[in-house]
Image (cartoon, rainbow, N blue to C red; front, side, top):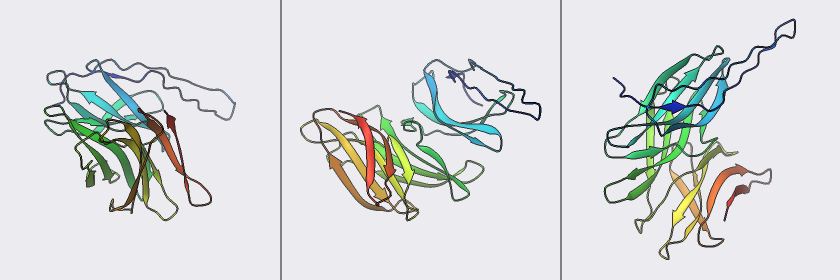
Length: 215
């Protein structure tokens, strides 16, 4: 049974136009769950919202990644969640959760509060939101590594951007390319100063990549 948590979807608004051009809306705050939880990615599927976010455990403050369905009337259902004792999961920023090959993909990270180590993680799920593949990617010096955004490449592989800590304690842009099953092809690190966070990555028409973020 799920423990008490707080999931706050700040604004969810859906407009449906019927034959007479009338519209209906909902704007719902879901407050059954423990404070500190939130949603990150939302997309539509079969007329419903599918959301990926975090449900926080009030007893340990470890985070669980939750998949939530909201129908066109605003009804809220938890479909599934990722829970691993001793780790605080983060699903990455908006757009990290995507439909892919009759299932879904997600790029994110996990932190182990005891010791403070990080790992970047790639998940694949089937249509029932069950995990069918998990790949982890480490920082060899033990520093921070995470995935903040995920996108699909022209060859059917996956491109991730994220944060990567180097030996001088700088936080840099990480760009990491895998095939469709998460096998790492290459990674690149870009530094524009002491603290850098990428928010989005996309493949350009010429085959290169565009990253947006802050420095």
